[in-house]
Length: 132
Image 1 (cartoon, rainbow, N blue to C red):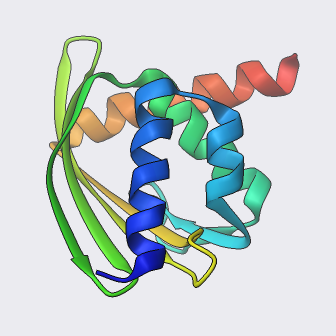
Image 2 (image 1 turned 180 degrees about the horizontal axis):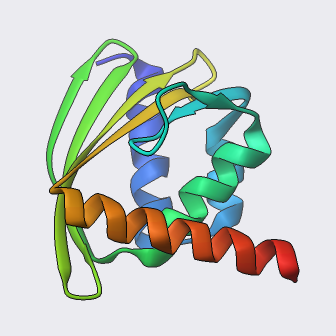
Image 3 (image 1 turned 90 degrees about the vertical axis):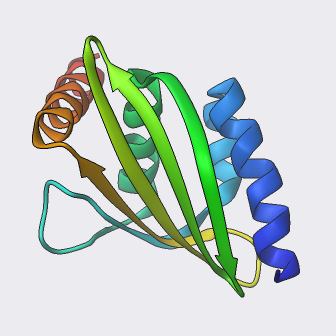
């Protein structure tokens, strides 16, 4: 496993466990991109990636990573979670740059009702944050 990937994973798991936005800030590269299951094309900008990831982690309940695959600076993390009563399963596919930061994260979610519940939560969270 690449040193950047291992260092990243240790810090990523700390962020997921503590939900601390300051931990995430250090994990995301300035030119990071996110591929969301809600959009076909990736979106980029550190502030956008931070807003989406913080909204997602805020909405997840009983979140657990179940498997981890690492190939150089490419990481795949499989997870289970729920939003309210809706259970979901997903994969985070993360590319880490040499500084140990997210260069790209692609999120895949199933089933469809889990994706819809997550998209609604993120939409509502971002709207609430914009109004504040």
